[in-house]
Image (cartoon, rainbow, N blue to C red; front, side, top):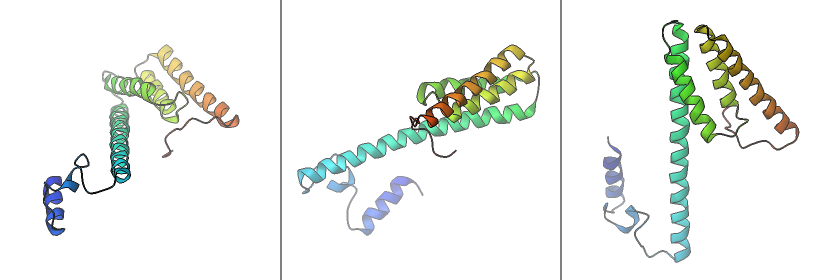
Length: 152
């Protein structure tokens, strides 16, 4: 069942049509201005949360594609390096510099580069992973931890 069908069914059960004032947060209702402002703020926060989830999901998908390509261990297949490099670039643009996700991606990229016998690049990537983790440790010890993802 599509989301709009579900919304229409829910509204029908509550006796409201999709065109009622409460169907959209931008339409005015008999709420007080403070309630309207709170509803608008809540809507903005949900939109922001949605965007953050989409960004995280993109990172996760690209990283997983890189890991799957890496498991193939095909010397001629550079897909893992491409996927992991793309993921790393996006992570660096969006996450704190001491993010463990960035360290993990550096590590996986180093492994992928090692499989392709690009040892100098692999060492640089692995050293970058160590540098990120060292920065993380330093920040934790000085209690200036960055607001990193909580799933790890």
